[in-house]
Length: 427
Image (cartoon, rainbow, N blue to C red; front, top):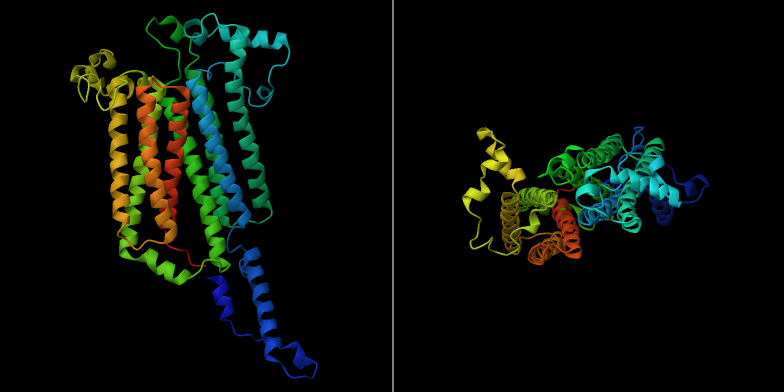
């Protein structure tokens, strides 16, 4: 630790008391040593101990990064509500700047409503809704887009400020830039997703359902989860490094040795794999949502009279569209197959996390890691309960939204557990 190293530095500066002709008392020496150490630490924090670069990012960057992650969490939850209320296609134009304003006059609302009537969702799903119903679904999508715009400002403006003021390291600046590009890509993917539900072909084909592509929906959610994970890990890393450099982690050397032990390293690798499994399960849920696959087979653990539907239904030539080599489309376009895959992934994830919780009971883990193990396991139980109740009750909006929100919390718990098990950096 930087603070510990400074404490061991010999004090080579002359003591002021001696300059005045008097003896250098032990108290004066100790006081000057403390002042020297504080100034040296401040220099390291501000400029990398005289090297012209910061030693570590300012703690405020970590707090801000975690705040941004919490905003992403809120945007994901609201986006799920927008999907569940079938509101996502109510705004049929992409206006990143001027679209931030909500219609105010009756004429403006009528103009937006007339635009909406030209697209497949009104013609097949919301047939005959009145202007008040349209305002409700319009507001859901408008608010979703605007909290996305607000997040862009909350992220990009402080990020530029932190970099311009030298409050981040070069590596930290690169990470902020990468997360910024991910944010911009997320916004572009959002409109690309919405555009898939506005295609005129959806109105012309009798068997077509006006909804966004499940592939683009999954990609949109994938970027949101990556952004959430990136912001969270970056925030935790910044705060942990700052605490370590300032000597605010008790028994740091003992903790470092504990985290480097073979048992801890092995458990950390298993947690990393489990975190990827949690993320994969979440994304399979996006495929379920994109196909409305949760509306069929509303029993659990059975799917109809058996644990799985008939093979002829799971692997149907219908989804190959006349191409025998394209039977794989059942995995991503057949609602029965997609729901079965999500069930299998969900139960695999639950039993994996259960096994890790049981394994952790016999390991000498740090207290913070032990707390997160229990938290992750509790969220896993809650996720299974929410998933089952959502399914058997016909996908009520409140249950489905809670299920999605808890999936983000479960991913966060797994990420946090992994982070607490990472070796301490050397400052």
